[in-house]
Length: 265
Image 1: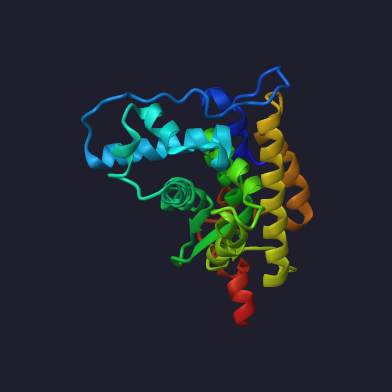
Image 2: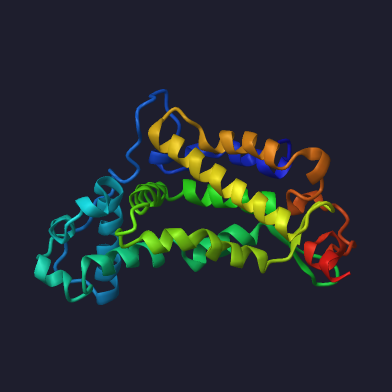
């Protein structure tokens, strides 16, 4: 997809974390293997809590929830297992912290929306879904250990007795409620039902590509997503609606391009 604003991302791959970069090897990548922790006895409560969650992310990403023990976490950061209970109540509590405090965060939501949104001459804030999807992927490339954590847990949590089962079962709809609340510039042929199907397809495609990327160091996630975007957002439908930079008339009102405006008419 030839959008000048997107071209620079393909030229910035050397700035990604090492675990996110493409190599000639077709072996699986371990995105969490390089994380180490300073084993200090004295830390503030917030510093220690963050360190515990980061250690949990690394351990779950490599061993899964069932393979993780609290002793693993204690050993990783250099404290006793008993000391962990000053900060967490249980193994399930630690899992919940990793998912809600460290994966689905306001910072991630803000990053995904910020450069996908434009404010027009009348003050309307309008968002562009293809760029929003690209931002999700770019954000994940900056946190490869979280992609591995998510992918491992997403597979494990298919089982109803997994403590993250309800989190993953409801996550798609929960995120959709946030997405549908935004003011999107969409092709005229899109209503909310069609947009929901596109959202489902795009998120499912991204999850699948991320699994491929974790399993193959030679797989370039960004380039594959750009190819995928060509299919999801074809030029004949989406030209001018893929990125805020495509709106060259700074004096134009963008509201007529939005689904919300069409549904109100």
